Image (cartoon, rainbow, N blue to C red; front, side, top):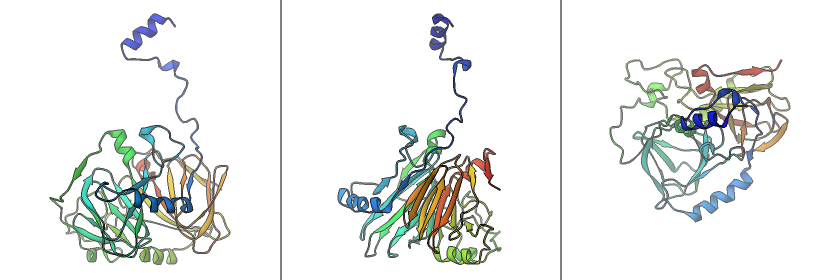
Amino acid sequence: MSDQFHGDMEAAHISALWERTSHGGEGLAEAAHIWRWDTLNPLLDAAVDATNMDNAERRVLVLENPAYDDLHRRGIGLNMVVNLQILMPGESARPHRHTLNALRFIIEGDGGAVTTVDGKPVPMMPGDFLLTPGMCWHEHSHSGETRAVWLDALDAPLHQHFDTNLFEAGPSNNIPPQIPEGALASPGITPVSAEWNQPYSPMYKYPLANVEAVLKETPAAKDGSRRIRYTNPLTGGAAMPGIDCYMLAPGQGAETRAYRSNANMVCLAATGEGVSTIGDETITWKKNDIFTLPRGNWITHKATSGDAKLFQLTDRDVLAQIHYLREEFAG
């Protein structure tokens, strides 16, 4: 092909498709990465010394996956960003809101830390799962005696892709009506007269005690594992757009059924210890370790202690909604 033709195309801001060597999809399976709590914990202490809430909107450490060196993809997975946030006794984080959907899984705390979501105070205890959906006002305060630490996850890369990220500082205003917790307390009964047209659950907190009770009564799969999903009680779908969440209790001594998917997943070891096989790699994990389950890999999990549980967050529901999801189970 002539240099003149290439020059004319470049000037016109076009290119020849037949000269591109990749159609995408190559290297679909990526290596897993683990952030061990033994490494993270002292960095959390150091972050407290490094900054205070007068200087930072939020005291947050961002987990950066070494698989992604592009600034716009820097984060834990293709469609998710995962952070660790620390709040000390007596501190508060001022209100703001954004189009990003965010969730919190509480790692440490004595119940004194509270997230207020659209005017509703939500106390945070270890193992609780909280929602701060897109454009909900939220702020944090801590009247307890020990540090509070939680995992943050946001669908920031999706908003970067679509250029839909908006941010607004407080004070909170124009808060929509909320559905009282009591109206959502009985499974199978939903308040149809309530005006709720939001795409997320009206429950902002899923307490650990409720999760453990449901897991205990959930019949085990053939591989011995038990798994529950955090859902919107009004729809039965994902609790919030952008990120779908589960709790898995692998069977002790037996591997879960192998599967692979084009969705990405991140796991936090909520309790216990275990082993996960991700493609050709085997990862041992214990409480509070965080690791990735990159798309395209065959994956299994096994508990090595009886109380092992994995909190799982994934972009699976996003792919399913637009009919892009592909997944496969062995056997």
